[in-house]
Image (cartoon, rainbow, N blue to C red; front, top):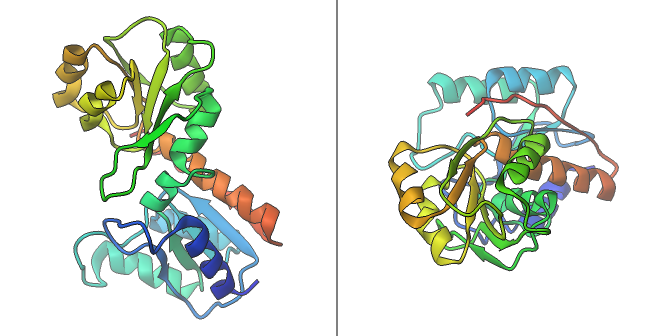
Length: 251
């Protein structure tokens, strides 16, 4: 299909232009290649990831963490290296950061909720004005150890757990990626357990103070589900071949 047709669909489906972010999202690098047959999926962008997508003969690389953020950088150094590789091989780059976190169907947090048996009751955590996190009751009110085991099974990741809340989990709050500073907000919303990605030393005592279980499952691991789900959606809707490339950072 035409690249511009796919980009227009993604922009609308993910509400790219409606959700403020820390840098421009959507099509971040446009190459001369205007036809898309293969879409490579990844969480991040690096020279190795680009080379892997090129070896698979992808036309577009769709990622969660793109290459354009707050500050305007020179197209030099590591950024320049990424752009040159993309342009050289005709690999278009599309990024969806907060719009993918916030999506109610294929978003990182919505997918995690579905995988863990959480009935989404509300959305919360709005770093730029749009809520990206979810919260709701957990089916069966599982023991914390059982929920942790389920998280590790689903995400293929090791967790770090601050067990300062009840033994049985009834209401779980989820923020993929970095949400360690949202302990108090999660508690105020009625959560007894909070799942997020990155750990944070300074928030250890916040979990203890508020009597909340906090499960840290890794920034990378908690943000693979949305990219995979979006790829599956595209494969089902369009005549596209998609493939997720796993490059875990263990962070």
